[in-house]
View 1 (cartoon, one colour):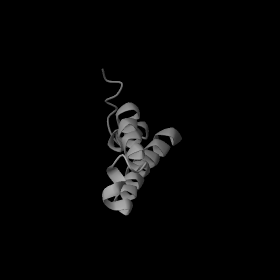
View 2 (view 1 turned 135 degrees about the vertical axis):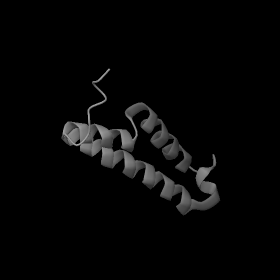
View 3 (view 1 turned 90 degrees about the vertical axis):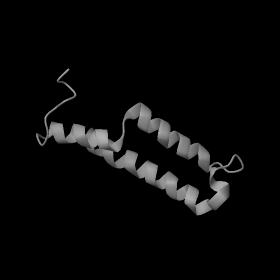
View 4 (view 1 turned 45 degrees about the vertical axis):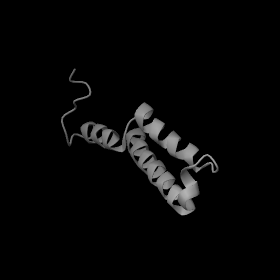
Length: 74
């Protein structure tokens, strides 16, 4: 359960931090002239590879018995 909770917090924080990073730098933030785009791409690919925050929350809810476990129902 601690890993699911940590994955929820970390993935959402990474996505939010990269979005704010791009906003902070303005128009140059998402161009090849600045490295901010690399972090945005890592956050997006991490969500695809490791799961979205909503998916982690659903898994955590299933682990603590708040929702039916659909991950093992297949």
